[in-house]
Length: 315
Image (cartoon, rainbow, N blue to C red; front, side, top):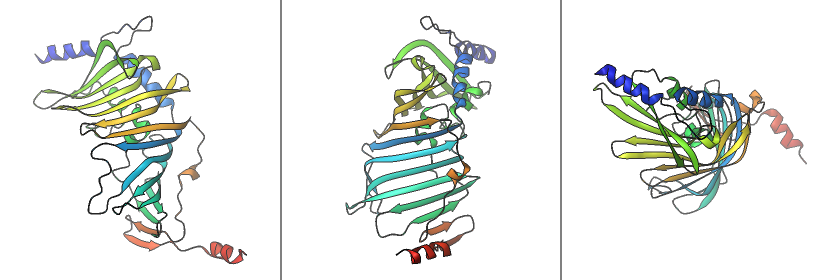
């Protein structure tokens, strides 16, 4: 019975799809097309993020902050993108007293050291953090890169979507390609289902991935499942050609089963720019109160003698 089951899955995973006059698309061809996105080795992206829904912006008694309007973000990164990056986020926040203020956060992760500076227009001094790892909310999936094959899969042990596709021979992973062309977000698409076989031999569907045939098999939708159905969905509403037959998502959204929505809009994207290592350096300005979680020390950054002299010489 086990051998028959594997045969059925194998036929499904390698079923051929005839799309008009285009080439036949099977699992290997799909993997080959997705792997081409690995041509992206460095990136600069400017984008905005807006959040809405019943669970967004709730201010708790502890003093949580509410995002007012949209967040402007700037990302510079190189592969594997969540290991070497600079992320700047500027936003307008509102505190529990409904008083708005400007807030900017710089985050850098390089050579296994994470640094962060938070600055606001309130009277509080800048706050800096040094750590060995970024905080849990530093998720590549919340950037435009999270809508590509570089997406870090939930339940995938930190692996990217491309990693999952490459591990099709993993005995616990089952990939099946649906031979039916359907329209998703205005694109003709094919669907790949990622399932997992558990110890009980029960097959559980974890995710559906739709690939746009209009955009050389770029991802147009990713849907996560549990026993109750879809719990999280990533949608691409618009693509931009970035050359070499590659397409980049520039209008995206994330929806969860609770009704919350994150919308991402890319205003500018540069693929494979030449990056200087200095772009991943972050210095704490004088007056910054730093928490170093590596050494356990806390201190305030003092100005250098050169900075003091410059202030004294300024007429």
